[in-house]
Length: 434
Ligand code: GDP
Ligand code: IMO
Ligand code: MG
Image (cartoon, rainbow, N blue to C red; front, side, top):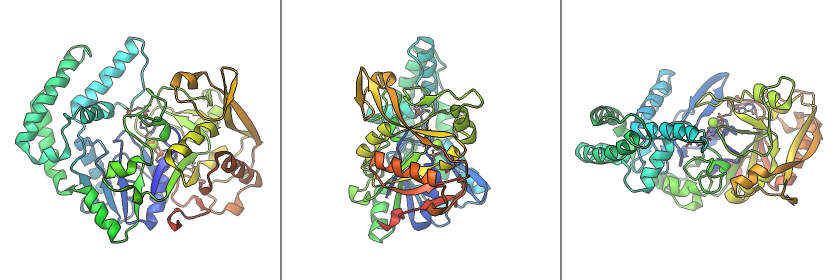
């Protein structure tokens, strides 16, 4: 099964993956890096994960980091240590693909320097997380990346590092107007961390194949969201990997037969962090407004960067594109409880663009920017849905809203999330029963 975000990220993937892992033997990350921030709440206790799969909070579940993920080894080790400090055993069940490209300090430097340059020359920032994700993927595609497997060969690593550092220093000291970095501290740190991580290096694709053959249930956990996908998102305001379900196979090293059910995670409204078009966006600063309600009640602040997330109504026309690209089998609507108490609830059904009515998100970010949303309005509900676990307990108006959303999107709602905690979950059709 694959779990992907259908919007611009932060839909609640981590919470849902943690919940579903109750029925799985392995959880696999297949793209992105520590730009992701997945928050899990278990019996009131919060855990934020970035690189380690959200199945880690279930003892005994195997966690795989597939070849499609870019790894900052220093960050990875610190995330492992953070989990160990709260009593979670990680090392015996974390498998790190040897083919993962590495994020090294100069990638972070280049990422940040480029953003500063975009801001100063008027191009406009993308609003990246500043973790070096884009520059690391660039090196992968340029076929010069250092990979996890290079860490096992110090001499080879040193040689490739020298070459790659020279290239990035050329850009940093030149047109990026930033600080050049030294070889030795990067090398020493990488070797120190490698000594700790190397027992977890693995042939992940093969391990997953064997696990699948044993009859294990495997869950592929997407990071970011479909509208941040490098090809299908609101380019150039996107991340640098394919976040769509189809990439789970390539990014984990398995065949597409393992992706038999695709669960789309959809927030009951929309948020976005960073720049880029957002047709249903609302102002979030004025108390008493809907935008303010979504931002504050939904606690919409980035897990990784702490930035306030932009907020707006649910966009069914954008979701329509997500459903198609991912081949979504079923939906989990999250954060329904955040809509509690709103007088009316709106859903964007399409846009007006250049005098035409369209029912799907355009492909060109400039066109999206000019889209005027067309809304269907529902009356809200006053009752609290927070923490409910049964469909029948939901206020009738909330049920009507969900039923209409399901009809608009054309995909069944299989789950509804009513709170951040693992147990605040309504199941209509269990995704693992497909
Ligand atoms: P992810 O990146 O998709 O895993 O999502 P994040 O963890 O970045 O953001 C989702 C936030 O909403 C987290 O703080 C979750 O704890 C919280 N959350 C998830 N589901 C629900 C829900 O149904 N209701 C509420 N109120 N919060 C939720
Ligand atoms: P999860 O997995 C929300 C956004 C950044 C920026 C753009 C590019 O928690 O849903 P990058 O650092 O990837 O080059 O930044 O992508 N972004 C996310 N937004 N949730 C995420 O992950 C994100 N990961 C990247 O804000 O707009
Ligand atoms: Mg997140």
